[in-house]
Structures are given as C-alpha cells and as structure tokens.
Image (tube, rainbow, N blue to C red; front, side, top):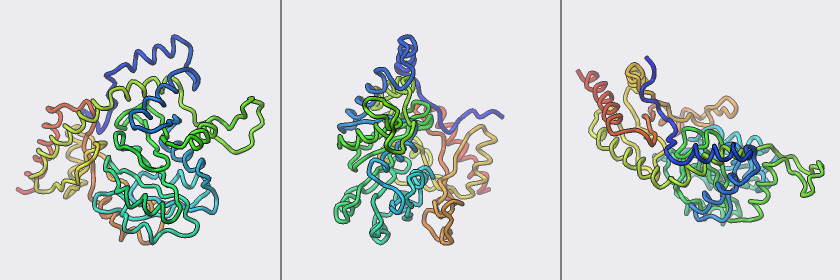
Length: 354
C-alpha cells in the first residue's frame, strides 16, 4: 500500500515558486546573485544575529563552523551520544576527535556529564537541540567560559530557537522545519568568523581570484535557487512554528492516556513528534500496513561502526534508541490526519490489551 501519511514533507505555501522563477528568469541560478545574500540577511535578522553564511547542507555548516574556529588534527570536540551521525562526522572531517557524552531524559546532552569529558585537547562543545528541545545552554556557556572553549550549536532541528553560542548551524533538508530541499546556514555575531566561513565555503579564492589557494577549502556553496526557496520559507517561519505547535498539542491530547505510549518532554519548537512505545516494532509494522510512516530514534554514536565502543549498551541514549519512534510531523498535517493517526495508535494498543 502506498504511504498515505508520510513522516515528513515540505510545506511550500509562500513565494517559493515566485522567487525561484525570478532567479531563473534573471539568470542567477548559481551561488551568485541576490537571493543567497537576501536569505542570509533575513534568517540572521529573524534570529537577532549579525551574520548568516549559507551553505550546501547542515553537515557542511558544522564543518565550516569547526574549521573557522581552527579545529583540526589533535583537537577534541564534545558531541552528544544521542544525535544524527552528521554531528560526529563533521568533527571527523576536520581531523579532530569527537568525544561523546550521554543524553539526559529529554534526549539532549547531559550537561552534568560534560565537564568530566573535557581534556587539554578539548576545543569546542557541540550541543544539539534534539527534535526541537533547547539544550540547557547557560551551564554549557559557563563551562565554555571556565575552560576557554568555543560553542557550536547544532540547530539542524531547531529553527526558532535563538542561538547563544559562537556559531549556530541549521539544516535546510526537505524534512526540516523550513527547507530549501538541501542546504544549511551558519549564524554568528563574530564578523571574522563569518568571513572565514564564507571564504572556506567558496574554495578559499584570493580577493583577486588568481587561482592561488592558500588553504584547504571546500565547494560548500548554496545555489540561488535553493536560497530563493529558503528565503520564502523564512518569511513564513512564525506561521510554520505556530502550526507545528498546534500539531504538538493535538498529539499530546490524543495520546496522553494511551497505555503503551509514553509522551516525551515538551519541545521548544516542534521538529518531529517523538514518543516511547511499548512493542515499538509491532506498532511500526501495524502503522505501516495502514499507510502511516514512522521513524526510529537516533542510535548512540558509540554504537556506530565508525565510533564503536563497548559501553554503548549501558548508555541512556541506547535505552531511548530501543524504544523511541516519531510520528508523521509536518506543517501541512491536518487535524483529520492527526485524528486518523492517533486512532490507529489507539487501535493497536486496544487490540494488544484484548
């Protein structure tokens, strides 16, 4: 049966087509032209941050941020166990070593465990706002101050949470709160860091474009067509967040009394609606037969083949990974859609109790 209720899909109800058509009509379809700069300025303004640097993905945003901060071989970066692997890979791409910290019960990095993982090689703390829940940033910023560290926020799932670290990195993949299909953006109040990230994303060309490149850099540029979509999405970000808050509230109301479902802590912004489920795999199979798509939680970084460590079974992150899933969550999800999805979840557990 074709999927009738996808776990995510983009909501393109603004000026996306108008802006993209303008980019094509005017011939500005590469990383040149006005739309990239307009998007950078608008997204930075929305977040009350001085500078935005657009790039090709959330992963490349993290990589640019780390490189701009001088992270490289021999350095260590504090990374949560519970995150998408791109957070750790960005560290590895620089030649540095990710040092993993387990999650608390809200799935975000357990702030109480960070200090014991700091060594003389530590250069950056990378908190991740998981599924739209803001990390407890005050003690993280205090640790960064005490140990002279920098903070790179992985905000891939957290559009609408105002950054406070040195650099915040957002993803614009098709399943994110706002999207460009692919793409990312870094935000910072530091003009020097912004200039360095802009330099690194564009092959580190010299000012006279002489083809003499003095450092290893990347082609991590965003196209004008992506930026046109991202700009239109940013213009309606408040509307998107309001719609998603309603979706969260409706799921809460429909599922809070279901024996078999454990609701997770409330989110500051809704990326995906995540729950813990008894007989999770059975529930997923049942929902799939009904055309309802779901996704599993992230696996701990120490369980990943590239970072495998024997203690992964003991991690809080693994306990959640074994029980968690998220339900269809996207801005265009209707109340009727949600009622159907909630009804099917209730049907599964009602049959399970018989």
